[in-house]
Image (tube, rainbow, N blue to C red; front, top):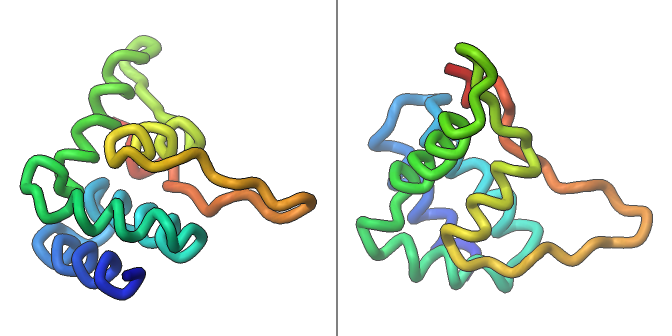
Length: 113
């Protein structure tokens, strides 16, 4: 199932600009699929619905950033971005490995406007 979800994400990535915020959302979701194979099926099922595309997920992150502006600056932390994606796709909270590294997250610079 991981392969199916990653292929679907790569298909959507091919339709957006390289390194764009939407492209980075797909990278984040691929990382989640690789770390949490049980989430890959949920992501794949959701991606079948156009309202659950990487573009729509990025809109949720941008809306959060816009709602938390400080002057002309808006930012979403990597943890907040992952939490937004988890909520949007209905993914469970990650299981923490004792002493293991944290998740790879979206680069903040991709969401600065």
